[in-house]
Length: 268
Ligand SMILES: [Fe+2]
Image (cartoon, rainbow, N blue to C red; front, side, top):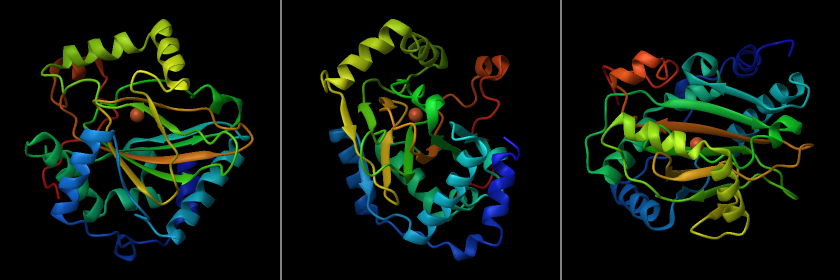
């Protein structure tokens, strides 16, 4: 790639200020409903959470990133790579920050921790994009909000595929690490893939729509994406909140917390 994704993003998004971006205010009743729906069916959705203009801007950014990456898979993670982009601006809005914190509180019954959001932009395309399909995992964060940007309209669209709420929030980081190591095993991954393709054992797929916001318990749900046509682009922005093991000494020691959410002294 001739130019880094961040440089492209900065060039693309110059001039869009936080004050220009208005996201919907969500009522307490809706937040409670989201938590119930996520518990019952694995996810909840807020239709048209961002407007068409924002989706178009983000699509243009993603298209440039993929073009300059020779049509192959690209990912931007954490505050450094996202910094200065339109996604950074969206991630800093009080509306989105308070939404994820309220959903966390409604789902866990606990006070949200003083942590920042952790953001990822995944741009799936090309043969390297195909390698991302059916990689089943648990997120490190309780709440995952997925904002689709570009989704193929026909053919293989890279649907979200999930087996919702398969584990509880672990009391210890070691248990969490153990879960992740067990799941990150080729035999089990193939086993999950077969179940997911056949929609057995609780697996379901979700055809996501650009501009909607999908909420699920990423920490508790086994999930992945289905394959996407390599000639097309499937791009999603992810906003994660609520790392139950943020202050674990072992994780800090092993460096697994390096690019994660940061403590925030003045959260929304
Ligand atoms: Fe995930």
